[in-house]
Length: 354
Ligand code: PMV
Image (cartoon, rainbow, N blue to C red; front, top):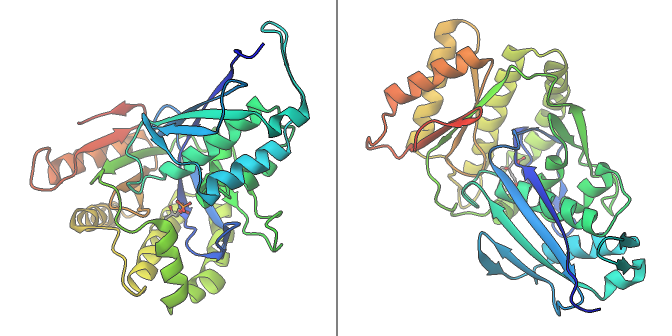
């Protein structure tokens, strides 16, 4: 029987780093020069949905992203596919009368259909959700018997930040010491219930694709920045310790101070790169000003901000009340249809403006 198809669908949310990963010590294996910590978003927003299918009728591996076929020939896709196939086990579907032996996986091809419910490559960590979902769904399809730590090390080879999307809550990517990357894995620090008062607002400043990919940006930074070594060796290790403590104790003032400082330092090393990289724009800077001013006037931080490789602001409010007040401020300073291109706010489970 040659016409059967076996499918698995999975959904994976994206994650936003509060202590940033920036810089690789090994580009092929994707090994970072520092540890990083992130928060995984609610799966209802900013997530990737991926369906993977296997059939003897497929004569090559193929993938469609947001409805368009993309090439799987790149090293990152190939590494993930190879690592998952190498760990495949027997699969049996009694209802359909399908039996796939471990060794058959080497000759069977897969079709992958992936969809992001948010702008791709706009600095909203689309590759994090994408590769985590790809690895997870392939692992389910091929009955891979590995824990999430092992799967995170595979997702990491697709996109570094993807390793952190295999868990909910707050997650640490341990850079590891081994040359083969076996100890460069993600671990969950606390689950999503631990600090559930936090509300994340994403102010979409621009959904255009970024000009400098994180891969080439990181390479240029590591090669040319005089600050990056100081950041990776002196600053981040201490921040990781303090951030873990702040998360365990739900200490918002410390959390906010570290989150904002680390975002600013990441953008500082980008500017210290030759040629300089500017991910934030004027609107991003005005959002920072607005949050800083409000936090200072309250005497204690209400909201933390962080920006990835793009101009969009990720605002983490200490609770729902602070989030509502933050939104009111944003709407006042950046009214819809004004000359700034701030065009939508996502809060909790609602997209408030479009
Ligand atoms: O995993 P990449 O190559 O998309 O790099 C992500 C880098 C940042 O988003 C800027 C920081 C991070 O830790 O996620």
